[in-house]
Length: 176
Ligand code: ZN
Image (tube, rainbow, N blue to C red):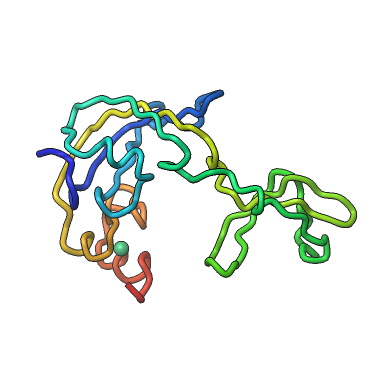
């Protein structure tokens, strides 16, 4: 079996940007599991995994345009402090804002009397990312997983292996 569309892939990875290690799944022993070919990974990583088998190791460098996109200065804005009334914003905090493009995570950069400076870019936007990957396991997806476009076991949309009915009814919502 090799990695192709509709295969469920388990892998370990070490993620670094130009400066430092950001995430490492080897240390905690819990692999990432995803459904290949359904936009669950950034394109630059997913394309390199196609065709690989369990046990394969690879190093992948992903440019911003194949990862989380270029950094967009326009997404960095000064918002009047009144908009954050009652939220006590502090630098480093994250909020989910409703925008015309749907829910978007924003990061608080700076707080003054009048303004809160927020950044709607993904934290990895504009960064060249390096992945050290080891493919650990492959399996076929279930029909329900294919229908939903994501996995249903081992940390997918629910993070639970033991209750398929509950996963389908409550975890993934009723609309899909
Ligand atoms: Zn689902």
